[in-house]
Length: 211
Image 1 (cartoon, helix red, strand yellow):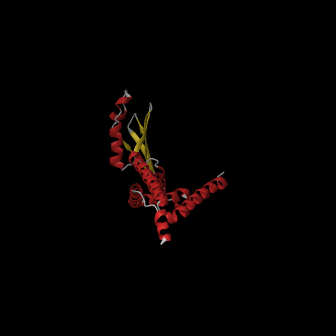
Image 2 (image 1 turned 45 degrees about the vertical axis):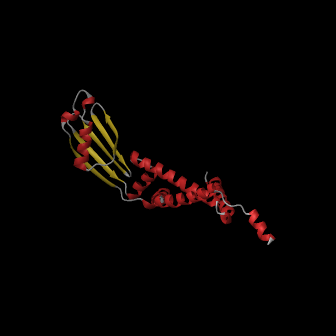
Image 3 (image 1 turned 90 degrees about the vertical axis):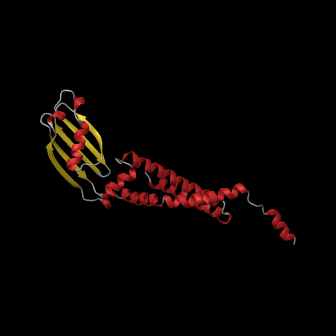
């Protein structure tokens, strides 16, 4: 009887705050994990393709075009009157050019336009005197597309925001998992030790293998 009384006196009930924190951490961890599952899978796969780009090199496709733009669009004394938007839209409509315009340079005798996208580039050179142009389109394959998306290169502001949001999601998943672990008394110590061990192993790999 005395042992039962001693046990009941030493065991302290969880506070309301602890219960709510544990429940919220569990809820947050589960649903953020489900939301970010595709994100984790994507960046895991593309991390592999990026680290071993030579394994996933696709066939490069290069296409060349030539044509003319209206002379009145480019053969003007005032370079501010050059029809930039019209030229870009003509190339997109007639030749299926993709990506965003990274450069539109105007020189005395020619204009040069560069389009960029994930695993993609296109460059046009227009003679201002006659309106003739040469256009080269280069597609680098699926591997290059995935690698550029992983790095956020030439992918636009919308994709950059997605990367930032994904990073925040993964941070919250990690933190909520750690908080949830702190409320698992039987596994708290072993879990923290494994986490510390994992961090130590990563540091040792960096210290020993990275020049």
